[in-house]
Image (cartoon, rainbow, N blue to C red):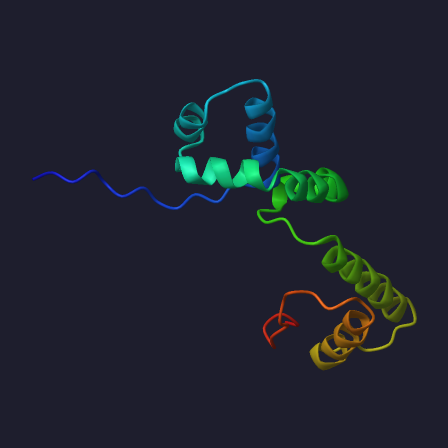
Length: 126
């Protein structure tokens, strides 16, 4: 008995997800888009269900959206922006920067936000 070959997992970037959302708005069918982008239909439906998050992330990332594969919360992006400013300031002052210092600053920056349904692990700060 011949089995259909298992499809390799394909991760779409935000630009591709926006194209899918635009095509859905124009009336394209889920099955057609799944074949066109070589993903499962459930992937297309998940993208449709998360439309607002995807569009918000793509908008905030601008031209970098094609490099990003997952959308993140605006709070996370805000924290990263704050860390970037902090790092640039340290580099401008020629202060040595290490992983432990960055990790500690990320913890401090993150503590000022409302609790997120996300548990930061040691790997998160790397």
